[in-house]
Image 1 (cartoon, one colour):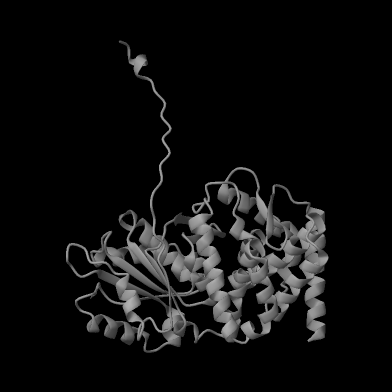
Image 2 (cartoon, rainbow, N blue to C red):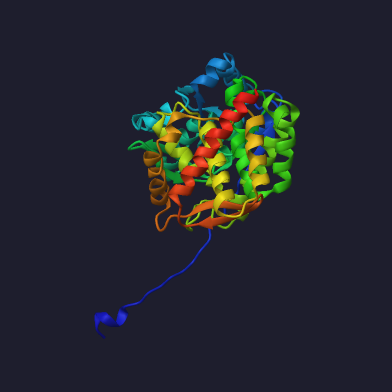
Length: 391
């Protein structure tokens, strides 16, 4: 029998079981600490070893935070072993723009002898969750990660997701992995120190997911926008609903690791990511997303059948949330349109963008009419000015 007789081709699909653990608390480091401790499973009867990473801005806004973490661990010596010092890391996009920060994180993991059954608990905004999550995902091919998001943006959106990354080559999220976090704890108390600007930023992602998934949710956001912007109870309901839809999309949408050609939860993001890099990240992510959602909503009304009245409701909602913004970079359309190719490259294959045929009725499109998109951008700029004049 010759060697050629042994040629064979096998394609065997298989599935991997994941559990996405999401919790909501009022005070995770105080009265609700048992919820965090319950996420820490012992291995072979040994205490779970945990290393904490904290966003510098969160630590500054909560001077007693490190002390509260130490007290939590001391009160529960049988349940948790603190592995090394509590690590503080720069917040915002700065942490994602310096690849050497990842090396520091890996050195800390190694020095503390963390292994696959150890835990990294990261407390911070979305950028810190992204960066620490990336380091945890590549150390030992995956250390258990527990996210405690401290922004409205991260609690309702990125903190629930299965992506982590850093920026490279002046491109947003160019380096990263897909990794399901061991757990996510959305804590209300840790949101209280956010500035009004950062508090409002998160609700652009809530508007986005509502436009894609749930017209009734969007109607509530539109109705309650002013109360949400002013930190009313409706804000917490909106965060929980946004988190619910992101979780549902990840666990039931059939494509959690974006193996297909569409990124439906990235509605408005082709321009948002480019605007962030074009402005050297002067725009917050939530602000850039609000601009991107506004532009793609108006474009959808011009090109894809979204009613003018619905498009206007979206613009009104963003305005009442304090998120209807303009930036000079929006007029640099030749550079901005480079974001389309970067968006395509991120997935590979042909360009696929999500647009709207109606609220709660997304569609995939594979090309953009640049002239019509410029018209949409100009209309958004005019709407921003009109809203400013009314105020």
